[in-house]
Amino acid sequence: MLISGIQRYNAAQPIAGGRTAVGTVVEVRTGQSCGHRHGCNPYWVPVIQFAANGHDFTFTGPQSNNLIGTGDPVQVSYDPGNPAFARDISAGEGLAREEIVFGAVAIVVGSVSFILGFRRLHARFNLTSARDASGWVGHSGLHSVRGIAGGVVALVAVVLLLRGVAQG
Image (cartoon, rainbow, N blue to C red):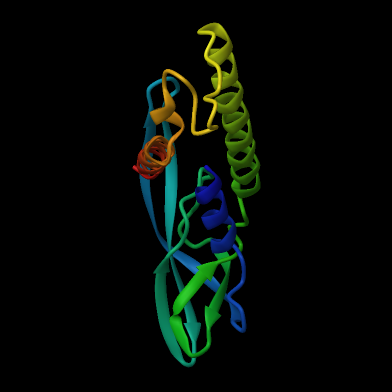
């Protein structure tokens, strides 16, 4: 969520050193985002055309949960050296800020829960720290570099899976 929110926020910002133009939605592609709990929700993806340097350029805008119509005007930011690189900045940031906040809160809550969970696990099974401070008696491998690396790999796999589900 955090990464997706940051990407959505950046996509809605004007291009640094860019110019702006008014574009027109020339096509709207529709789709559905389906979840297990809430059914399917429609989304719209605009194809936008604008003029720059005496030529027409077309690009695909960001996915929106709001109905978009053919012929709608949009604000476009483009690179004057390469007008094919453009963004629909009229779409706004949408839910980007909410995704960033939710993602950050989920990371903090998950981390705190993870850390406190080990403390409770240790208390429940009466595990005490090893005398040489190399780990916990009974499951030192879990707190080793290998154990932490495994946890990081699992976390990255979950994040990638969630991003794939959110994009698909």
